[in-house]
Image 1 (cartoon, rainbow, N blue to C red):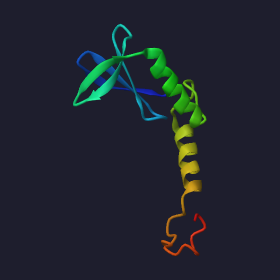
Image 2 (tube, rainbow, N blue to C red):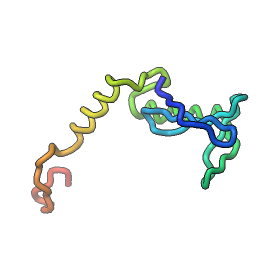
Image 3 (cartoon, one colour):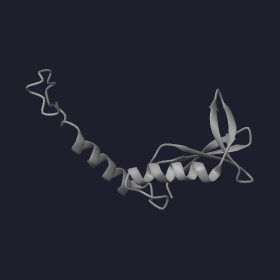
Image 4 (cartoon, rainbow, N blue to C red):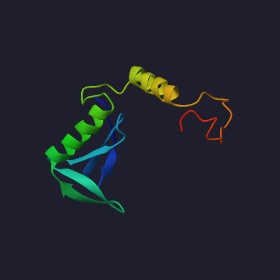
Amino acid sequence: MGFMYMGRVNGINLYKNGITRTYLNLDDEGNCYIAAGSGCYRRADFESELRKLEGTLKDLHATLETPYDDVFIARKRDELRAWCFPAGTPNRTSRDENPLT
């Protein structure tokens, strides 16, 4: 699984998904919380939060079972490079010169 334990705040365990970079916050009894700003958390529906996470993972062609490992990180890096101009490409300011416009 792609979760990292990031710490504990006010009895809430913070788990960050390495793929989506989003958090799943659970207390020791499994109750779910979402950040409410300024270090505060409020109760949330676990099933709803899990569905949001699964939807984001699906958009990234991943699942809860997808490992966040060196293979995944390399694939992500390669995909990002494919979407960007290679290093050293001059900045294009003219609409006629920019193939993306």
